[in-house]
Image (cartoon, rainbow, N blue to C red; front, top):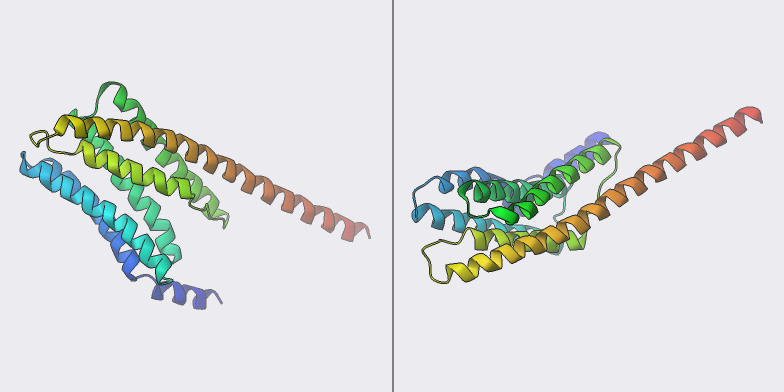
Length: 213
């Protein structure tokens, strides 16, 4: 039974949505390399990578749902790829001074939240449970991508100050959504744990009744 399920999952491994997700993971080191290329070429390359990665985030999900290509590996890697890309991008922006002052607060909150939720997913996965992706979390990721794209915008390009302002506002908006969805995930995890404890208690009660009977 286990071999059959494993074989079916292997068949779904190299699907188009998964390949797009892998490309988003591969975009992370490319973004770091582009970041250290001298301006303005490096800025344009970084901006292109961010936009391309953002598009693959939408496309892979659409294809997976539209053509029934969902898989366990895809469900695991998709949010992980987003977290890697967003966290590294925010670190690069902070290191370069493109975000600073109070704008570092939402960046720090977003990175901390991503680490916490990743830990919760691993914790639940060890118990055979899966933390569902909230619809609001998808909107949160979209807003984060908009913020990062604007903040990577070339400082020498026209309208840079307006784009920078939009990026900063989007970053704070993403932070609010990050806190809301993060709290929701924590509550879901607590609910799962309580449910498991209740089931375990019921099983123990039944065993005791059988032994006494």
